[in-house]
Image (cartoon, rainbow, N blue to C red; front, top):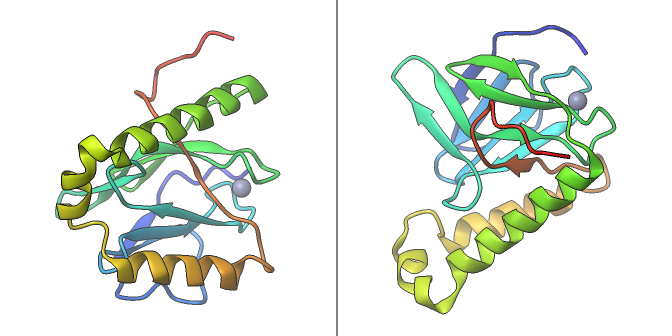
Length: 163
Ligand SMILES: [Zn+2]
């Protein structure tokens, strides 16, 4: 794992085919951010932007991604926060913690898309059909090359889960 502490951002219409290290590409049109894993393993980390996935905060100079990025499906198992274009490394999670985190993600998504929430989900500007179609095409295109999916990790950076 290298000790990169800084990352830059680029707002793009389409995510480029060739990704550079230490750049977070953000496509507002496709509500997706993509970067190469900050550990240096070159895995592509896709972080969809939605109320139940990640959000990007742009302060005019730098970006932050919330929640943290846990690359549990990569061999590196890296876990970090991107805050104001700085990488803040977080500790690895145990298998149990990962399983709990995934379950919580599923529950959050189900709650968000449940009938009670149908109206906000439909009216929210983050669910254009085009974006979902593009995203899945993109995933299918990448799938044979490299497995990728960032696991979102809810909670404050300093929060520790009891084993
Ligand atoms: Zn990595």
